[in-house]
Amino acid sequence: MSADARIIYQRLLNSMTGAILARDSDAWMAGIALPHQMCTSEGKLILEVPRDMLIAFTDFISALARIGVTHVESSCHRARVTEPGRITGHHSTRMVRGDGHVLPEYTITWTLTQDDDGIWRVVKSDSALSTDQWADLPHNDLSQFQREDTDSELRLRKVVQTFFSEADNTLLNGHFQDWRRFYKLPLVVEFNNHRMIIKTTRDLRRDFELYRGRFRAEQVTDITRVIRTAELVGDTLLMATYRAHVLSDAGYIMPAWNGAVTMRHENGRWRIVSILNALPCEDWQPVGGPGENATENRVDRPEPAPVTETPTSGRN
Image 1: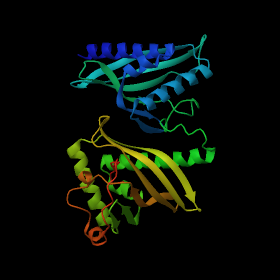
Image 2: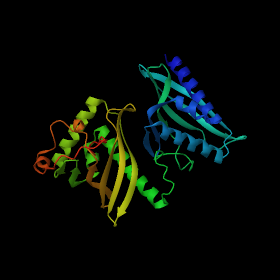
Image 3: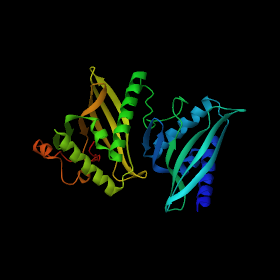
Image 4: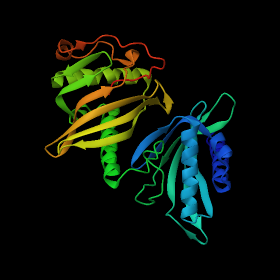
């Protein structure tokens, strides 16, 4: 079956490479499954709608044109079926300009999924290429394309992006002591209709274990936040907004939501002091509630007035 998987992978790779060279967005989009997760050595992002993927495609081929790429060489090295309707493999890619390579050969790992129509599409892409190697590479914030950002703003967003990538990975890997160092107590968590204050490490540990249990039950494999804004307030406070995604093998287990955090810089590192979510998804709250001290410090608020469109949000 691995031979068949490699054939399927290479055929799709040939089709996608041909679409890039032909600047054929329709052919490219036909090979992409949404939501689509993209990873580089510097971060992760989720492309949720066709418009975001189309923007990413257009920006990518424009970057190729700017640096004079005339040919793209891609070859599948290995592919295997990881479960029915899913293939994972990796391939190498070289960007060619005339007789020479624009970039060193680099490796990309794809996850393919077979839809009900029987067509294989790329649902996740993990590239070893970084913006240090190619400044024009679309990366962490593809869906934003905020060209007006200053260098300082971009650097600050990258700091927050790296912070959350590390924090969320420690949560997924079940390392509480490592996760603990990303938070400063007391931690204030604002929901739509109440506030929760986590005062002690015991309460934070309880919250951690509740989420870990829910993640295992839902088979969560990825938590991804795309940082929208990051702003320094004075010398020690940083406020950031983001769009968060919780996935199981690149498929959503709940809708994405918008959130915000305040971080304080102490003893050489940033720590979260407060978390704000637009509207919590009540079904996602951990069964059993927060720790004892957190429960004692809950302050209920009146229910909000109905709105036409209610964004779904989650904790943290």
